[in-house]
Length: 134
Image (tube, rainbow, N blue to C red):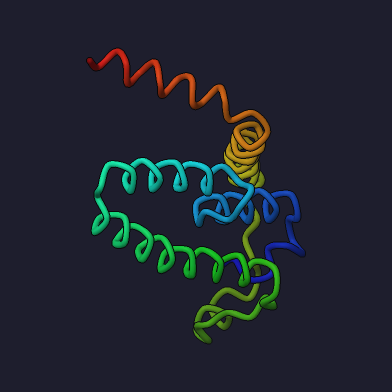
């Protein structure tokens, strides 16, 4: 489904690629900052086993996310399933769906870039939310 997306819709491909890389925890994106702060607090509290499991899980998930980004940018438009390419010779392009997807991905892209540029806002909000619990 996503093979060759960078050639068909480059803005959506950039947004989706950066979103997946942020979720994977690639620095300097916001996912790396959140995972780093979470693991730092877990290790400082003495939760070593949970930290090791979290790092292993993050690496495994990161491999899958980076694989999707690789498919978006480097794989041609060939489908993995031969019957799909035979049955659907023409791609049905729905403009309303493309607009909704582009808006959603653009919003997440903006949020990732905003939190990457000024993470203090997010840290202040989470700090105040934590203090309100106690």
